[in-house]
Image 1 (tube, rainbow, N blue to C red):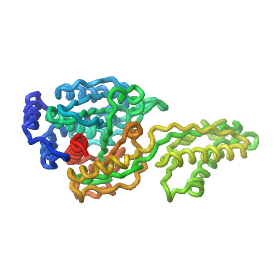
Image 2 (cartoon, one colour):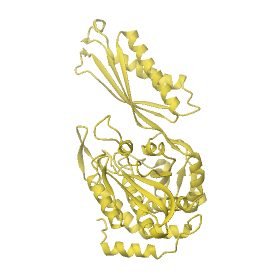
Image 3 (spheres, rainbow, N blue to C red):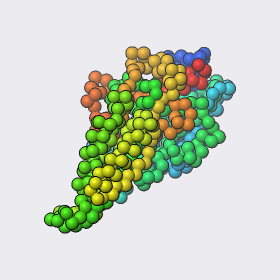
Image 4 (cartoon, rainbow, N blue to C red):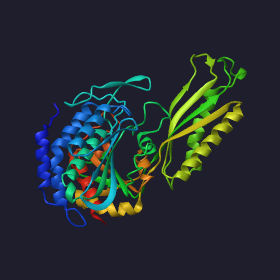
Length: 438
């Protein structure tokens, strides 16, 4: 059963942090930061377990948003709620002049059924785009919310001697909205003016990552995570009897030819030695009966790129390939592409400034440069608005082979809760060092 906290326990915790040594100088004392992170960990673990047991899909994070807002109010903050449906933000104003920063955590879960095993495993079910599904925090967003609440608690406890201002951003729908084609959570928050009256000098985010062991931290300057495009290709032919294909135009065959040609296009026309490109079809739907050639076939997939110019070039090549194959067969092809998230690109100057903070918090030997990762993150929307920095926090238990661990989004994704303290400590160090100046 998840541990619960009484208000008296929270007050005692806050008093303990206020009494802790001040973080002075250009860089916060790593020992003091580590102690602050340890002081909030019991509560961070409890928050994470509570949220894990009660996951909610994108734009439905009602319970999670209430938990967040309630905790922020206990810290003396005045949260704004209902941004991008369920988003929550609050600004902590320090007692000293200084810069403005934003720290972001995503709140939504995935349409994944969780296996039994954990005492706080999810048993939640929901409807996702017309299908009944299980709901699970299979990506670790429960940890992100808990970590940011821990960071907020530690920073609020030293408000009077804190320089600058910190916006805590709890974002919905990073995994996507309930209806295809709608904006993801970060873009919708920006569209609704989350940075209108508070434009930060920098924005920070982290992600627990099964590909690293607990204690390890991964970063990268420049492109780190891929752009994510959702594409759909509709091939229109002419329906006829399956025994007489010459009387019609077979969209299934044309669709298959386009799909195979698209893979040859990536292998032979795109310089993937310079920058990786992934073009995948996840759906191929057509027809209703074994002996009828249908009018239409539809392919749906994803495109992952790291360079905006390469992205545009690949989309143009895919459209040309589809048009040419369709025209040769007497069919037509229509390609639609929706960008769900741009590439996550860490600002080079900000990366240089933040890297020493990561090393101070995690230990130099535990901080390594990550390779390009073809998953995507709509944190990029914030980082395209102001300089951003995003990093990985290892979540696979020490002693286990991280390379073989079930990756994020797997129903078997298993977060070792030691990652919570590392995440709190590293983000707290990054925030304090930035606020106290270069």
